[in-house]
Length: 195
Image (cartoon, rainbow, N blue to C red; front, side, top):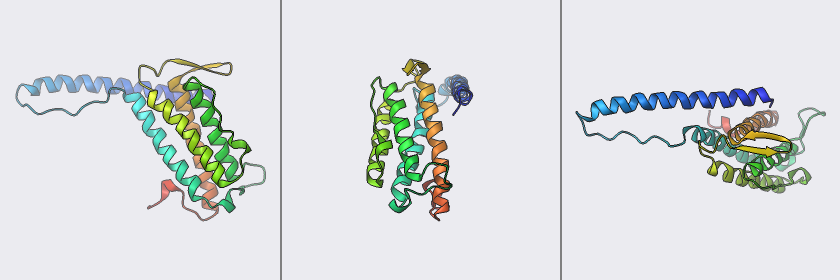
């Protein structure tokens, strides 16, 4: 994913938060007017709308990736759609390593799952799950107030929101590639099950 995609994604979150804040103000004003005539309680608003929405997207990608890695038979982990691209197993490893690197930076630690050195389905699924455990910690600690905190990754500095949004975007992109591998093997990807 390039820098402009990340900037656009971050801008969408800022716009969504602004729209939410305006809607909340309008709702508060409307509630104040109607509160005098009725005593009904209004639904609670989330305290962290931007980080909550990003976490929801992350959770969807996480569930699909884990189900996909578990569903693909081991004999297809070496499958490549064409000779010059990664195999399905290599894509699982790529996602796991990229996520662990990004989320451990957000967590303020350097942690690797070394999935690129693994070849069996069991080892790759375990590495993918471990990378998601590292990311769970990053997302659980994210609030809208902490979203703009800067994090170093190599020589680059990015906001926590930008890093995690970029990670979700990258993981979702890789899921799309991997879904094609499954379709080529006549296997329905998890996100299309039941349709």
